[in-house]
Amino acid sequence: MYRSLTLSRGTQQSSDTALVARCQKADITAFNEIVARYKNKIYNYLYRMTGNAEDAEDLTQEVFVRMYTNIGAFRAQASLSTWLFRIAGNLCVDAFRRGKKERSLVHSLDAPVAGSEDAEEGASATRDVPDWSQEPESMLGRKELGAHIQAALQRLPPKLRSAVILHDIEGLAYEEIAQSESIPLGTVKSRIFNARVALREHLRPYLEA
Amino acid sequence: MGTMLDCKKVQPQLSEYVDGALDGDAAWSIKLHLATCAVCSRVESDIRGTAELLGRLPEMTPSSSFEAKLAARLADQVLQPRRPGLWSRLRDWWYDAPYARPMVGSAAALAALAPLLFLLPRTTVDQSNSKEIKVAAATNGSTLEQVWAEHASSDPFGDDSSLLLSATAQSGEGFGASDEPAHD
Image 1 (cartoon, rainbow over the protein chains, first blue to last red):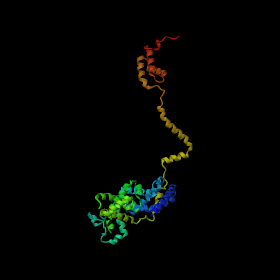
Image 2 (cartoon, each protein chain N blue to C red):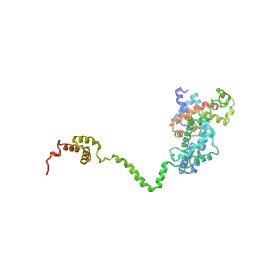
Image 3 (spheres, chains in turn orange, yellow):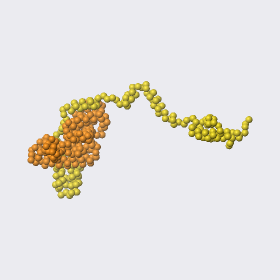
């Protein structure tokens, strides 16, 4: 199993290298192949980072525009996927810095619900979180589960969020994350550990189910 | 039961343990500790559960119009012809106008050599001698123009000794030419 996975990754790596070489010679079909191969992974990462479909799609397009304009500078020291995730991560950081995306994304479970009577009165109203202990069946609802996990992800600091998304959702190895984020391996491990510990507090109802 | 120190060492490694990233000995030590420590065992179970929940999230996909929007964006941002910059326009001109290259090369060489004109020594009278000339003129009673003319003709390099010699010769002092016997 592990061996076949490694072989599969190796094959894709060499295929990526060939695609990049063609793309560097302005072969638009190679560019389209790269887009087709990675658009879902990049979009998924950006969706989990931003929590917003529109922002994720906009940023994903920007990732491929940046890839197209900078493909000449790409060297095969890193894998193509690592490079793309790095571009995506940098774009996310820029977007969060501007504040626009972060504001639209963070739906804190403790924050007052906009438009609610309590919010207008300035009371400490909180989002309507289902009482999972009373309705165990509803916990199985995939949409609700997904929304709750997404809300928990949004509460993490962006650095921890990015590390845990890349590892647990996108399936990148520690070394690949270190390369993508330009951080030491030990930092990757501690970020993933801290992110998981923080997430388990928010996801405890699911973990105890 | 594991000690507190053991738990402090073990818990930061639980994430790697869950991922199977620890080597054999380290993984075995953790496994032994977990078998005897309920607290760490609970943390390990939570971390494993959290990772599994994240891994079960469905993959989100972009809209069906993603490629069309991307193509439009690329055409708008990247493939749009832009006015070339000054450097690229100069480069194009250089390649398109071979007849102008010798002229440009000569002009560049002249421009490079121009500073040397100011650095080379000049053959004109050194104006720094003017003070001594005035002193000599006052001493000899001759006009300033006469002393200037003598100085210029006697020593092109502005040597002070010849000026002083000529001044003393005219006044009849020292070892001037008048003391020497005439050679008829």
